[in-house]
Image (cartoon, rainbow, N blue to C red; front, top):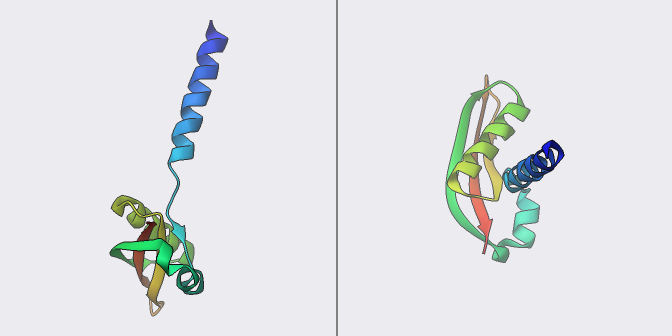
Length: 92
């Protein structure tokens, strides 16, 4: 009986983690090559990050919150801390 519960719990957790995909960063070139496949759903920003990976993670999180699947960085500044802006898209 315990084995069955463990198997069911493992399958349930796997399904949840599989469905929780983060928004994916698209390059401007990749977006431009297939822009007819995407619809823009918003714009996001991040500021005050100290590492590029932190900025990327923050933008992805904000794109997820908007319901986006993809985001394209439209501007970035690394003067003292990283500031970035991105457009958020999902497939049509």
